[in-house]
Length: 88
Image (cartoon, rainbow, N blue to C red; front, side, top):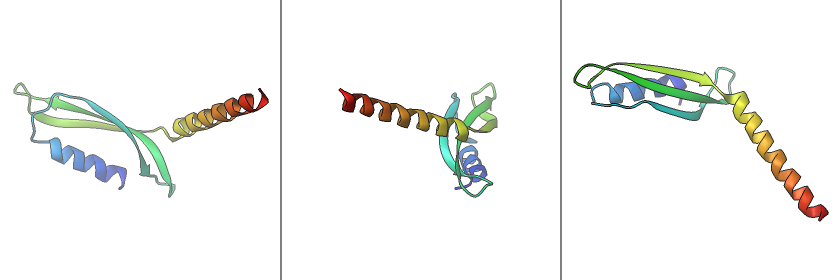
């Protein structure tokens, strides 16, 4: 699902519901480059005095490079542990 469509669906769902939270999630979405990329999505509601959502603010931050670096580090750590165990 394209990132923009997901954000619109989320905002439409919560538009008329009383909420008092902030949300963030990270997921893979189809990027402009034609492949899936990791994005950190943050949602923050602007509420009126009755707690009703007036407006939603959302940001999408591309964190694909960070996620891939974390995966590489995790894989290298596992490989290093396996090598140490083999050498014992």
